[in-house]
Length: 195
Image (cartoon, rainbow, N blue to C red):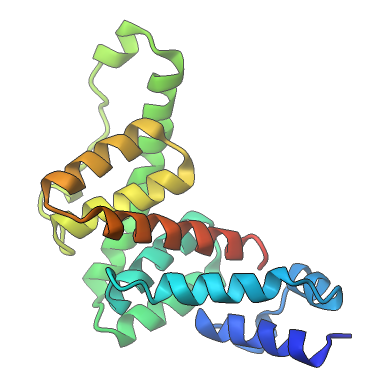
């Protein structure tokens, strides 16, 4: 059974991401049963990442939503959709996060392949992947690039990460904002594996 302080930590962690106590998974329970100190670290990491000074609450929740979509975690998707909506996100913005995450999954696989193989034929060939949502994003070009970078980092595509980071710097984005977005997505991914 949970130690009271560990149970409180688990409940607080779930509340930070908009989940009820019924979402205690077997993995979270295993950590709580062992009174794992990692739970406290994870709670602090999630809290600090969601409260990064360079991201608005809406932006943080939309980035978190992208991770939830990427990781196919329906409970987190619903929770972050609700939290983002409470911070002013509308249906078109939510749809764009979902669309961008899907598009980045296609791009990340394609460009990782090109990078891994590193042959002239593949590098010179047009991608042939339609990306019209990138032309005039509802969330604005800077945030769309930030979102694209974050998903690409989660998916481990070096070419995409490099390209989106460069585009962000050209938009005038501060490196701290980029780092905060990537840290948030990394921490949320680490949480998602426990659900």
